Image (spheres, rainbow, N blue to C red):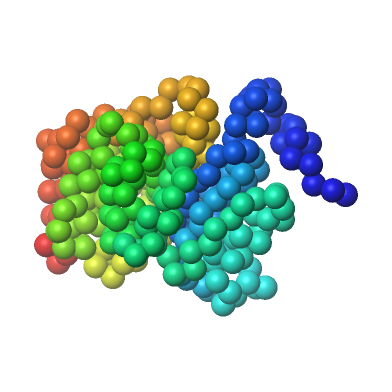
Length: 287
């Protein structure tokens, strides 16, 4: 059977118009990271009908990825993540226009990575500080909207950075701080509501210094759903998108949704207090 775009996306119609679906077909999204969230971002957006992607990742699949990464299977062990996910996406839509960046993102390829891109969706590993700082800075410079959805516990925290509004750097205040401080600021800044913390059964599983933390497939799949919805609203200019310092966190385990507003980002008094408390809980990890 031949692939026909209109038939493949027919069940989207009703929630989007035929004209909007046609518009999505001509949009290009960049995703850095093809792991826990990046891979499922790609497949979700491909099923939404996005027609072109720039994909970046330098890593290969390992058995430690099995609990949460949609591309991790026995048949893909040791294979490049960007190639595995590209194959999976093309199996959904063989007409996709894909540009692969098998060495990940860096200052050397950022201009190419973002060339012609309508939206950036962050799929980088939590601890990819340099790449994340560079990609969001490029988005701010180029006027490209950017969405980050973090899998926290069995839920997701979402921030959208839109042209003309607060930037990633303004919100998180990373600058040239040490990596451990960046990790703390990222964790606290992503989810000011902290809904996930109450049911963490083994706090020792989180160690920022060792770049280690637990994760769930539920969190990753919730991330993909909300990020794709933000993408739809941004790309079609329909529906409310509240840019940072607005954000929200949904936690399926606690059945709670909290919308947050932190003017000044991590400079907000409540955020500064949260970071101070986090440092006290980890005295050996102070910076």
